[in-house]
Length: 216
Image 1: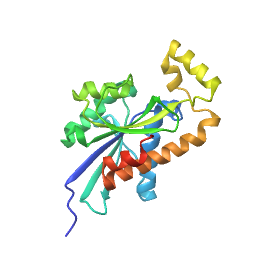
Image 2: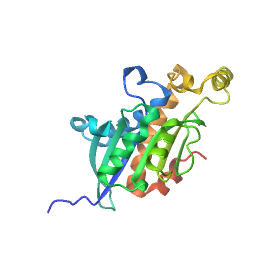
Image 3: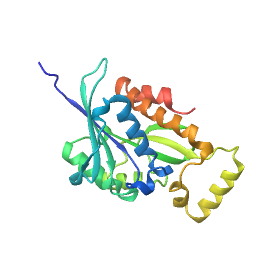
Image 4: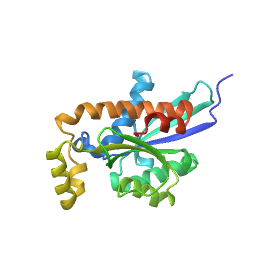
């Protein structure tokens, strides 16, 4: 008898579509979603499909945890640009008839130090326009977030000075910039950690993932 899929998760990586934005800090959510697909899906199936009706690129996998039931995982990269992310998430949530507790959003976070991670449920957007768009579109903040830190480390005086100037000028200039050469190592580890955190949450639950991956 074939396995019956009774559960589903919608995992949304936030970012901006197009080559211009591929390597920017604001696309960290896209990067983690892409890494997760490559890590846990056969190479021939690591394909993203353009789905205009959802205004997203999607990839679908089946996840069989060691102790749980078979789950369908919808990975999404909205093509609405960051400020319109909520439209894509709303379309997907309505079509698949998901509760918002089944939505996991992966995004960059300028309030967390570079390389750190926080998994949490609900709460305000803290100024993140993609998260705010989702809250407004769904009419609730009750969904999970995988927050990936991009704030320069305190010991980097030059970067800190630049960040302060950026905040005074326009924070968008910072998040739409690319990671610096000296940051690449931490970014790669963070992307790898984000992929592992999603796996841990699927296998053992979100509380287990919080315990293991949330920066102390």
